[in-house]
Length: 567
Image (tube, rainbow, N blue to C red; front, top):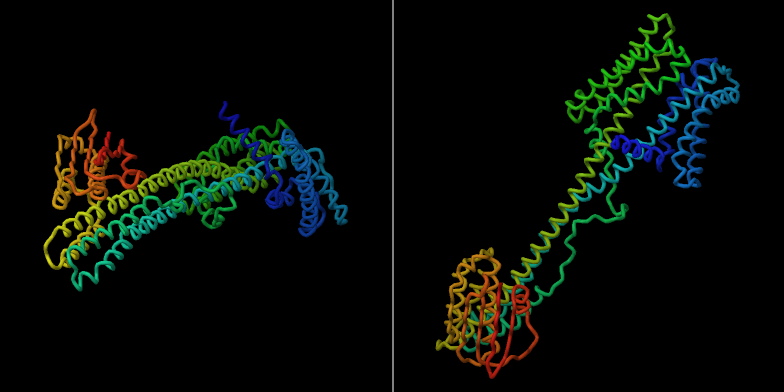
């Protein structure tokens, strides 16, 4: 019962909302002016006279609708529904009177007929048709907005993905291409003409400090350009207009049949006043019961028929199907009326009227269901976009952090280590070694970053630094704990940062490296070297390490100690 009440409240809100009186109300009901409901059977003259009287009457109805729109601007919201339905009823009451007035205005004879019956018929028809049109127009407007936002969400997802890919390419360009270009530019002449080991060491050290280190800081500190957040703009004017053909295909391709019982009851209520006026209460009961049975059966057949039709044919099946049901209804009504001895000459209008009402109710039901589906898809698309945007930003953060670490802990460390190795060499020309260093860095920067196992990376670090500086290392039983990728990455970075700092701030005395387990599952990295700190401001390496563990950099009695505890 609560579901029925909710549907009724929603339909009333749609029928009496902003679309209560629109140009569509006037256009769609234009054919009613030419039906027996308006009184064409009472016009004396040919078809031209009927059309003229009906046209003037319908223009007057249009003026009443304009007056209704102006009235609704002044009516408080609490009285809007009552005002709308009362106005619809008044327009229905006035319609036969306007028909008579149009005849007088045009000097065309128009009989009054059973004016009371005609007023009742028009009042019921007008309230039902105007309400149905208002619901349909409001649904079209609402669904157009939902459909536009759904398409915008889908397009935004593709746009954000492309923007993220471009941002990653930009990051790699600034981290890889620009650094490689400067490295090769600085070393090309020396590699061709030859260079003493001492100058090569100075060159590499300068490249580490003046090129690679600033580049890593720049990447680390750089703010992201907008990569999208998955949320659509709140102002609908910022969204692209709906492509009409695409929207029509979307709606009519998902057409479904009207609810059989609801449509049958609605139509019976519409023709009830006409039946009472034309035949009386007792005479109309048999044809009414027979017609209701025909409607229930025909409507029930329409449900699977429309559902099984391919999308491109659904609109055709709906239109033809309800036209056939209307014809069957009229045929059955005429047969019963004839058997009862009545005159069925005006029953034919049921076929055309039912075709219009059946399609209208099917359209409203279809659009309501479609809007619910599209709203669900829109919510799902927005949630998906938000998750994708978060994942994209996370990927960008990961890429940026990885590139910054690659430059800072990898390339910079290799340049410093190579500089130290060249500085202690005795060869006359270090151009070949210089080329080897640059080639190695180029391969490292250009190749996909496939991280080796933690044990291999730590062993390579210790070996590389051990060949360049006096290093005493002690690696405890931490290998099981380094099975966690993030912890292993942090340990490798801590070793690289500690040894690079030991060279940067050291005095040439032996450096001690200790890697040991700490409770409960963490790893401790301790690097001790001689020297003094040139600055107390932490650099990019320490800032990154502080995001993943506890970092302490201390100086005491000519010794510098870096302790990193990674949980």
